Image (tube, rainbow, N blue to C red; front, top):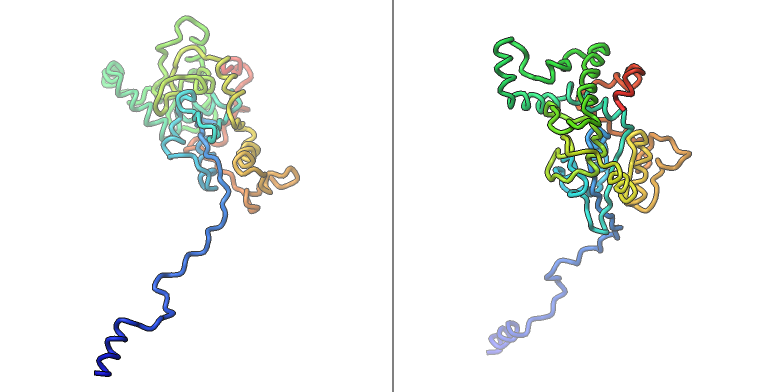
Length: 291
């Protein structure tokens, strides 16, 4: 009887235990400063791909990769959220035009879009079967991607830029053949003001350039960078997002320092185009045509 009473008492009146039945609470998370997201308008051939790769590597919020690289028109693409910073890079116009030609002629993207455009021209296909010409209309008129000599590049660039200059300012503006690649007429102004939606919408002609509208965008955009001042432009981004300049952006510091104090090796994506053919290779007599 006594033992049974003890057993029952032990069952219904257990001794208190110090064993923890739940795991200890986790340590508090370190305080993190909120950073505003960026909406980056990638105008073609303004070092946009380089900026995207570099800013994403530093942890900046650029949204989805498709949004950041779609080379869209600014008005339907910009963010109206007061917490989002709209960011645009612009480039010196002459260098920008030359870079468009090099992209169309030498890169994988240029080869693909000009080849696809050639396939859509039935008359061209018939003519090529008769004369045994190349399948790429752009390459036939302005040179192929294999010959990278300065003489060959210039021999292709001059008729290409004159092709667009002949209709600039004339009544016959629309319907001009861009060979499936960039229409060289005021591409940056067009990207800031065109209204079409979708990727690569800024590549093709969309009516007369709206310079007044583009200047209004320049005045209102949150962050405006310049390709020729690429390092300084990224310093501006760092300051607006983080609220302070990193060591590499101090004027007395070496321009090759990174945001974290180490060595900054800026991205330079040429997409396979030639690096050694620049604006200085163009004859002075051709520059008014480029303008």
